[in-house]
Length: 160
Image (tube, rainbow, N blue to C red; front, side, top):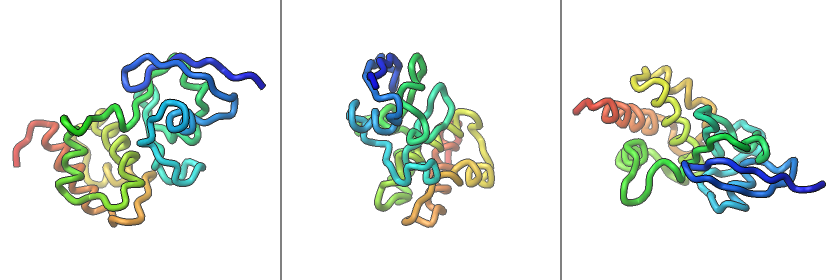
C-alpha cells in the first residue's frame, strides 16, 4: 500500500506527514513528529493516556487513524504550556502533588482542559465523570480532582 499525504494543524502549527493507511494518530505523533507526550497505555481506547483533541473534541489518539486528521486541528499536551509558562492545570497538578509515575498525566491534563473549555465551572461529580476515561494506577484521583478544581477556580478569576 502507498502512504497517504496528510496536511493538518498540530498545536497551531501547519504540519505535513506521510502515513500508512492503518497507522494511528498516536504512532504518527510519537514516531514521526516527535510529540511523545501522549502515551500508549492500552492501544484500545480504555485508559486515556493518549488523549488529544481533534477540532476541540477529546479523542483517544490510539483509536484515530493518522489520515483522519487531514485538514483538522489537533492539540496535544505539547500545545498546552511549557516550562517557562505552565498552564494553570499543569501548575496545580504539580503544586498539589497530583502525579506520580506520569504515564496518565498528559491525558488527564488534555481531558481536563477540554472539559474546562466547555464548562469552566464543573461540579466535582461532573469532573469525575469527565475524567472517568483516564485511568491512573498511582494517585487514587483525589489529588487530581482537587488540583483541577483549584485550576478551574483560578482560570475563572476566583481567589482563594
